[in-house]
Image (cartoon, rainbow, N blue to C red):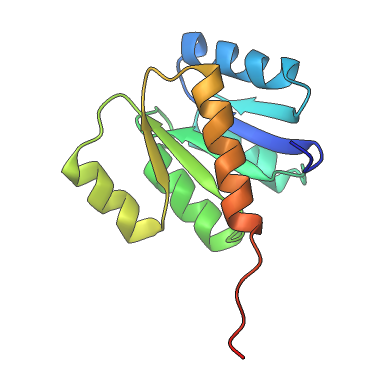
Length: 134
């Protein structure tokens, strides 16, 4: 991947999910990784001025859930793409996410390799040049 080192924010209240994914992304050498245990802490990281290129968040978390986090990020940082991780992808969850924006949704458990591939795919999609009408 020749897109330079990207800054990822991983948000999940379960350390047994968060830590292995964060460590895998760090060890790959392609990403600088920030972690947060809930949406409130994630917003503090954004507001502290850390460069964040990509968000990966769980939905069900205490303090501030993923829906509220995504709504804040979509409003305040609209160019930052996001992937949603959830234990159960339901029609209701898809509808709630669609009301906020267009997000890739991945069911947990997810391997580091699958998450890495999906992040790279999303970076490529979001950095593809738009076709201009002639």
